Length: 465
Image 1 (cartoon, rainbow, N blue to C red):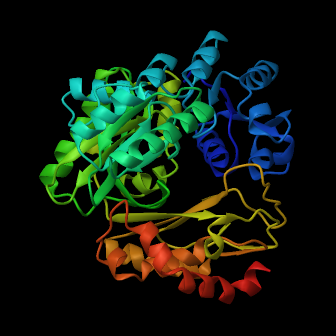
Image 2: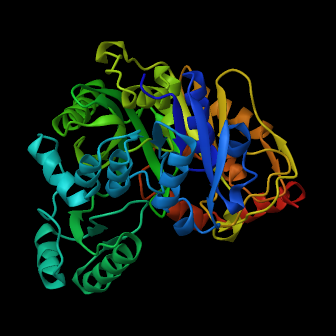
C-alpha cells in the first residue's frame, strides 16, 4: 500500500465515511474544510484539519489550488474526492497526479471521456452495451436539434453533455415546446458546467432507473450487482434499493456483465457506477451514463454484498490489484436507503439549515445511519441539504421495509425540519410496497398528497421547533 496519509477533499457524511475507511486501513487522514465547516464531525475525527477558504464552495471545496496547497503542507500521499465537488473533474485528477500525488479514482482522461455523456454513450455502444435511441453525439445547433428530436419521436429528453445532478435536463412533449426547453437546458448547462452542448434521447415511459456498481483496477473489472433508484424528485434520487426486484435473473446477469465490460473497455480504475433505464413494458435496458466516483447510495450495495467499497477503492489507488473475484460477489437479502435531508416536504422541500438540538440514532440488527451529526452541530446553509443516509437490511424486501419503519421511528433529529417523516408515509403506500414504481411516479404522488404531507409535518412540529 503506497498510501500512508490521505487528504479528504469533501465534507459532511462522505468525509466521515472516507476517514473511517482510511483508519480501518491504518492510513492517517487530513480533512480540509471551509470556514463554515470548522465544527463539522469530519474535522473532529481526522488526524489533521486545514482551513481552505470561505464558505462559498468556489472559494473552498472547488478551489483546487487551495486543496493542493493543503496537500503539500501536510505531506499526504493521496487525495480522495468523495462525491460531488471535484470528484468528477478530470482537470483536478490530472492536477493531483501532476503534483506527484495519488488521485483515489480513475485517471483524468477516463473521467473526461466518461463524464461527457455523449462520448460515454458512443463508447458504451462500441462496447456492445444497449443505449437509448437518440442523437449520435453532442448537438450545438438548435435547428439541427429540433430536426433530430422530430426524427426520434416525442417525448424526448434533452440532456446536458457535461455535468450531472439532474441539471441541464428537460423533457419536451412536442415540437412547440422543444426549442424553448432545449435553449433552457443548454443555458443551464453552460452556467453550471461551462459547456452548453446537449444530446437528445427518446423518453421511455414508466422507466426504472437501475445502476450497477463496479470495481476495477485498470486491467480487470467486476460488478457488485445492481441498485434500483427509481424514486426520484426533480431527477434527484431520494430512495434506493438493492437488488432490483424488477429484474429476472437472466436480465440481471446481462445488465451487470455489460457494466463490467464497459469499465474494462476504458481501462477504468477504482469504484464507479454505470446507470441504465429499464423498460418494464419490454424488459429492455439502456445505458444512460457512467458516474466516475463513489455514489451517495453505495451503502445499499455494501449491505447486500458485505464489501467495503470505499476501502477497496483506496486499496486499488494504493497500487493493489483487484483482490475480489466476480464469483465471490453474491447478493444476501435486501437493502433500502433513504436520504435524510434538512428540507421541509410540506413547503416545496425548502432547505432548513439550523442547529441540531437533539439526536437519537437508530441502531440494532440490520440498521446503519451514515451521517455527520452531533447534538449542537450547526448545519450550514451553504451546501447540499443531505444530513445522512438511513440504510436497512433484511432477509427480504418485506423484512427490509419493516426494519425501515422501526429505524425511522427511532430516528430523532431535533431543531430543524427533515424528510424523515416523508419516508414513513412512502413506506406505507401500496405502490411502494408492491414495487409498482418508476422514475416519474413520485412527483405526481407528492402533488396529489400535499395536504397529507403538510399534516404530517405539523404533527412533527414539536420535534422541529
